Length: 174
Image (cartoon, rainbow, N blue to C red):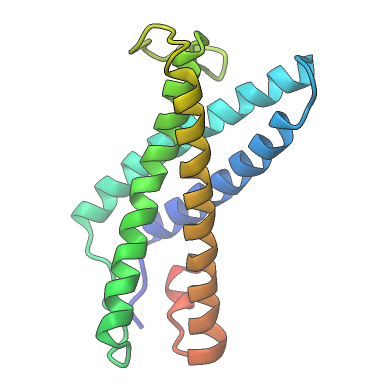
């Protein structure tokens, strides 16, 4: 059985864990009323996770461009292969788009992003009260798209494991 490389597996699961964490933290922080120290701490953690996802997504994309993915099983139909290809491409796009939209939303609100409280990220735009609501909506919609894509990806993996029993899921296991 063809497997993904160890770096690909590590990046896959690490990014997945961070995305789930950022999503859960995002849902939690926006439901805290007012402006509390806890809410501010959660916002910082959420941003740090987003920056980490973006950096790891860059590494993952570089790895993927220089290392061929294992072939799909011979029994997998062409439409399933095409769908899997587009789902993976969508997940890659979203791994970049979600953190970038959050970054620009933060900048539009006049709040710079300082990674781990140490490394200030470049301020690429001035505060923009006009763009802030739009970027907030873009970040939300992209997150919902990521959630949908993530759920479909997991369901497909479970289908291959428990219905097709083709061991496709095992290619990405550590």
